[in-house]
Image 1 (tube, rainbow, N blue to C red):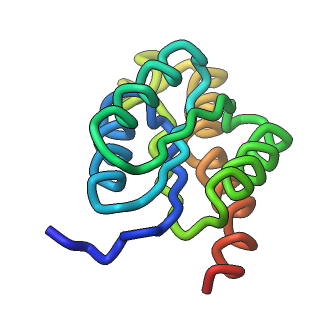
Image 2 (image 1 turned 180 degrees about the vertical axis):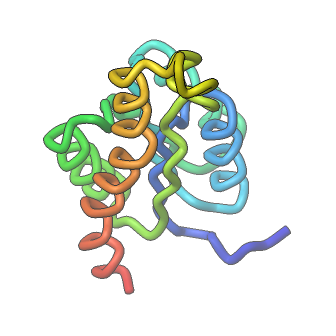
Length: 140
C-alpha cells in the first residue's frame, strides 16, 4: 500500500515496544525515516537496530520521558535535526490501560497514580505536539 509517506520524517513515542513499534515499522515500510522514542535506552536501541535491518529507511533511537517538558523539547529538536525535518508525530508513549491503581471503582483509585497516568498519556502527548508543531509548520 502506498500512503504517500516516501521521504517523510516521523517521531513515534513509545516506539520501542507494542503498538508504537508496530507503527514505526509501518511508517518505515511506507518510506518514512523514523525517530523512535522511549525511556529505556537498551530496549529502544534494540528496536532501532531491528527496524533498521528490516528496511532501507533510517530509524533512530532517542531516549525521553514525556513527563519532562525539557526532555520533550530536546527530543523533538534532536529528531528534527537528525532526520532533516519533521512531518509526522505519533503519540504512543504510555502503558496501555495505565496503572491498575488508577482505574477501577472510585473508592480504590489512588490519586497520585491517576495523576501520573494523566501526566504521561494526556499532558505528555500535549508536550510532544507543542514541541513538534513549529517543525511541522516549516515542512508545510
